[in-house]
Image (tube, rainbow, N blue to C red; front, side, top):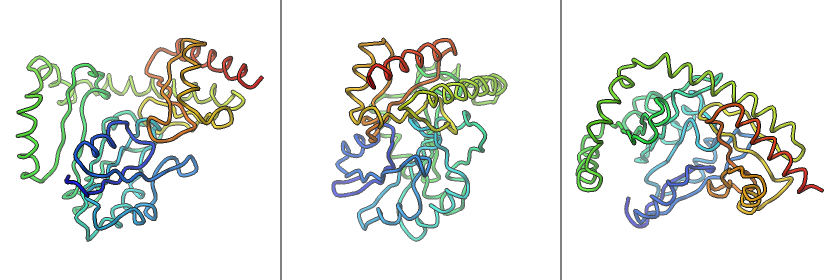
Length: 280
């Protein structure tokens, strides 16, 4: 990326992406999404955002923070818009193993055209519960791009430590797939219960996530200042959630269900009490 280049980023987005674009001297172009569209961009929105300066589209599926997952039909429709352009796609697929009632579809698998324009970003932090080990990787058929990234990586963070590499082998070989599926089922059960509990709270609402392990809870009937809401919630109840504005969408907070069901129930109970007090 160079100064003047533009990168299209659907919101809500993972917090790092706009800052990385700005750090590179380029300009993030944010496309707003909503609950009606399950927080996914449409081909029409993508087409309207493209200019002669557009260099990249960043897609996250499954999404952190919303849990939305693009279907094959949706990705095919977006790929049609990109045909005939030189726009790259950075596809963040970190949560690919954690999907619920939908099939995960890799962006690069859509077509030969998408294969050649896509850089797939993945890792073992989520699927294999190796968060602190920082094992990430990417894939692209563009060998020149890989060579350039290798130069930068080798002079900045060097490499993944040897202990982490050894620990990652069973996950990469599929030897822990059974454990991953067990974890996925547990996450799905937690999501189902948490969604039901949140939607029973007057003033709050949430869509069931299709993937990842977060809920993006709508608080617009209670507050349009998610930072203040989350600050007051933490001070009053000890429950920590992340303001939606940090992900580019005001009027929401992100709730993680990557913990035991008892903690989830207690956390939502405290949130319910807090919301009732705010409505009084």
